[in-house]
Image 1 (cartoon, helix red, strand yellow):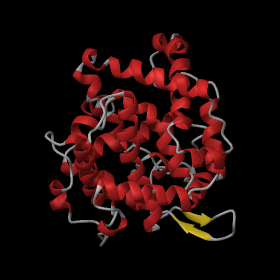
Image 2: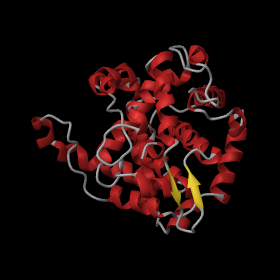
Image 3: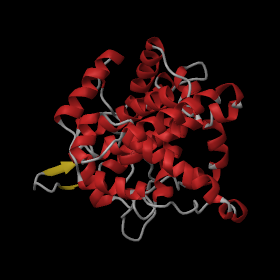
Length: 318
């Protein structure tokens, strides 16, 4: 039975970015990955999302798996073409139908609550723009509006309703500030994310042995950058709620990294400025098998409920 919230599959081309879109050209710059922790923290500070991640996620045990699932979701959605994008988004929504439980305050939650579900999608656009402004090719106001319009349209394939998010980038800034001020909390999941990001990171399990042996040369600095960006890009009010210190020395360090990263732009090959197609080629077999991320705690199974392979984005994929 089709989900009445989703648009018909044969209309997917209306919602998926094409090669001329700013989303296609800017959503997978390698430097934007520095904002992954920032997006995740914004998501899990929402009480519903935080509760879902705490009850249904293995982020702490498998952070690399979550990163791969996030990249799979974003890159299939943006670069996989209308049919693959629509199928991926359908799987995401189907999986979320089964994520529900009780928050620490005793109230019930469901992953498809419109506000929480839309917030996850919105934070990805926020992270793409903010991380690229800081570390890569910045966006002017017109480019921000175009990316936001394209991203909101893509959200329709996920079942994010038109009325759940504002139309304009200016409206998004008011929406974002309201969510930060009125909705986001220091959840248990947020503290767990911060603890995980502060710990030394083992080599990704998918690296060849030769690269795994030299991981320390790149892995520790990369973890440092992601850790700084995760905290430094947060609005000060959220750092205060989480009890996080942000010193002038940390701020100077992050700004210096940003300046150096932006200076690399003329030297970067297109394969690093638009990594989505490369990612899809690399992960083609896993995506075809449906390894794009089943629910983390489905007993005895690596598939989403009902037999459909799952997928998701950051907190959207537990």
